[in-house]
Length: 410
Image (tube, rainbow, N blue to C red; front, side):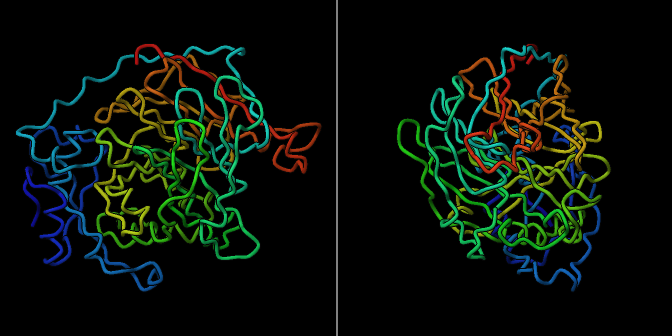
């Protein structure tokens, strides 16, 4: 049983909730894989969840996601699904593959930001500012993208994250995006580097995204069950996320989330995994109701995507000028960073002309009204006076770099 191609996914989900769980699943390497019109994908039996992952389970009926209705949204919008997109008379045409995309950046395009080292997820605020997380603390800082220097403001959100310890453990915030006036933030959802459970790292939450002057403020309530929702979703069972969640994030087959961006539809977000890397492909999962999740609703997911990034995984994601920027890197400690551009349908294109050997990019600041994008580097391991930046006690000595890049052929 499946949804009609023109059926609104939400309506279909309500109908399917009254039926037995889905018997088949589909995983696409891109929506263009199904351009032939068969709308079948690669369907396989869905293995049942074992008793070993019972602690992650909840009723599958809450997260059952159908495939044909979601596909209509993917073909119409390039990411996610909305009722309006699904009801279009015919899908939007698949974009033509991109030709070569070339980056242009000089040493003079580097900006230094003070007060922290480990830049991770970031959100543009207005024309010149951005908010950024540090995956070594729970402070969101606002900077001037052009001038660099010390933060314009900072807010410690520990109290709003409902953390499980009085010691205020780090939440390991790794990704961010914005929808409307709300900034969305996502933690790694992985174990510690030594393989110990870290409940504080299971957070999806929202803040305001003020354009001028005002400081960031938490809104909604932090959501703890995003990983549980993924594990309980039959359509994601293929990826073995329950087993991955038991391994250290940088071990082969471990679990580590590092990317998130809003989609073209303005309502869905894509979640990008650094680990696992199924079949050597980068795993992306669309979250269909992010704003509702940030207010406490259970997560609903679209059909997973596997992207060919030359064996690399997702370090960061950003929608810019109707295409997706993907910073790709290795699962573990190797500094192998490459920038890709994806049109939402065809194979991602590797950007040429950009040397990132001395940087460790983990975030984008990308505004459609700016011809350049800003790459933010996690410089926690960069030595300052013989000591790793993240180990410095004096925060005024901490710093991270940003690199302004111009793309041609985009």
